[in-house]
Image: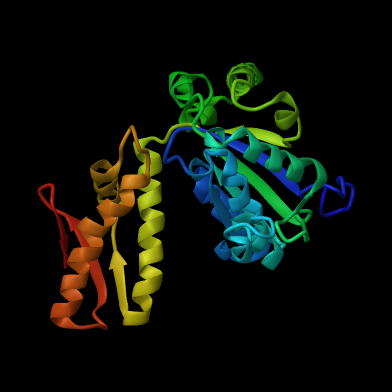
Length: 290
């Protein structure tokens, strides 16, 4: 709608609420959107709402008025958007913010602009607003077999199964939105373009994430004349070591650092660069570099 010019001109380009457990890719999705639409992950402006739980936190977003401490510093939100008007603005853990902070955000959704502490108008009309929340995360886990398991989704080929999955998803979505009403006012929810539910990750998902991270590592290694080779077996082993039901994919990065990057760094320090292809192999429940 925004691209063809039929969207509302006094609002952000789009606004979304991402619901789901910790570590399932809500923030990563925002990074991808920033990169694909605005050319770089640096186009992501991230605001941690758990730091805005007090009434006075509004001044952190828009800046303090003249005569108050912090006036010269500007607002964390308004200054960043003013400098980078084409951006994705991510508000993490929206449910933790003070009601006055949410009122500021509602103004962004309704009018597409804010006035900062120095009296300057800041436009949000070229931004994409994304909010995240963990509300109802435990319920999403309970409903996983009712429409949030990808393998099951792929097997749902006939129209009856597709219809059942759609119904299950809508029931879950409606249930979560009812729970959201305890934290967010109806006019706030009504201003969102879409509420999107993220299912919990599986070991297969974690293995796919490991492969993506190894591919990124190889991009950095290419400058040193090194290519790391690995197979599905190694990816799955790393995923099993780093995956957590509680924290999702977040511990995977640490597992990759400990199991791959640190031993590889030792090897480079010992033998130098331009080593060509190095195989990452799983032998007797242990990863080796050859």
